[in-house]
Image 1 (cartoon, rainbow, N blue to C red):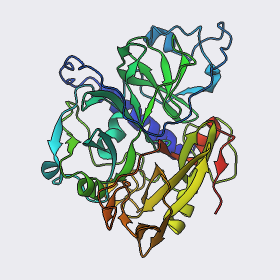
Image 2 (image 1 turned 180 degrees about the vertical axis):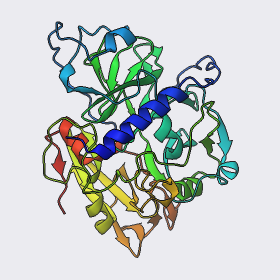
Image 3 (image 1 turned 45 degrees about the vertical axis):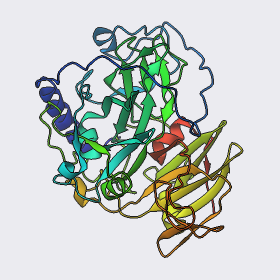
Amino acid sequence: MFSLRWIVILLILSIGLTACASATSPAESPAEPSVPEPEPVVEASPASQAELLSPDESPPPGAAAQFSTDFSKHSVSYGDILSGGPPKDGIPAIDAPSYVSIEDANGWINDVEPIIAVEVDGVSRAYPLQILTWHEIVNDVLNEKPLVVSFCPLCNTAIAFEREFDGQILDFGTTGRLRYSNLIMYDRQSETWWQQATGDGIAGDYTGEQLSFYPAALISWADFKSQYPEGDVLSKETGFNRNYGRNPYAGYDDINQTPFLFDGEFNNQLPPMARVLTVELKNETVAYTYTTLEEMSVIQDTVGGEEIVVFWTEGTASALDEGLIELGKDVGAAVAYAREGHIFFAKDGFIFDEATGSSWNILGKAVAGELEGKTLSPVVSVNHFWFSWAAFKPETRVYQP
């Protein structure tokens, strides 16, 4: 049963976000450019074809009136889907993003604030969580690659997907619904519903399909601008009136907290609100707890037969702790890479490889030593609160040192 406090928060968010949704929207996006061949990365495991459930099951309350989705096609029980409060697009996606320089963004982003870092063929962009917390979805094009960058505050999941799908460019919005507390997106072309945590189509024409993940790192603003001095930043001039920088979910990031709007079951190997970084390769899924990552700084493992390494560093604030994001507790940042034959170790807060003693940063780049300038290939890895990921992937192995 939900606490009175969170019911009140839900009502406030629902009223506030729905009222603000009628604000002047950004201008229509320009025509999409051609899409280049994707760069090689270590990709997440593809989803197996989902089994369709009864076409006679009634869709979630109110959904048929708001969507043109073919709800007779679905792979999950509609009974598992809950209303998050705001209606369809009540939490508005950013469809016509604009950008500012690092110098300009320095005036309103604190060094410890969390951002989602995405790089496409040497061109990088930061998506501050102080903006994504209020919009959850950005439909973007980075260096001619159409991407959707998403963030679900209730699950702490920051995920990027490729928007090129089935010969078209998809645009995404919020359904206003949750499953296992996780954001359900929809695409405006087919109005298929997509589970953000897994990228799976769960209702509509593309049920059983999966979006392609694209590497995205949840790191501090300081780490981003150090690694990518020529990068740009999602502007807070979104066309919407939001209190950017404030956290509407203050106090949610507490290991003793009860998950909000969660009506599922999960493996209780870990506390439900434990922070984990997950890697899924070739049908094997592993979770690395932030507690273990903080203790070790470097974890070397084999997932799906692939040798990987996970780096952790301090200096990134939680977006879901204090009322002001910049005041959030330091939870650090973790990112996974293909190991590429290297053996790494941590000493005095720095990461080195054994063979050359070169020093590496959180973004997988050698910053000093014989290998200076070399960059590791990213592995798709995603932050979660344990309760939500374990509900979707109960078979997940929790890494043990």
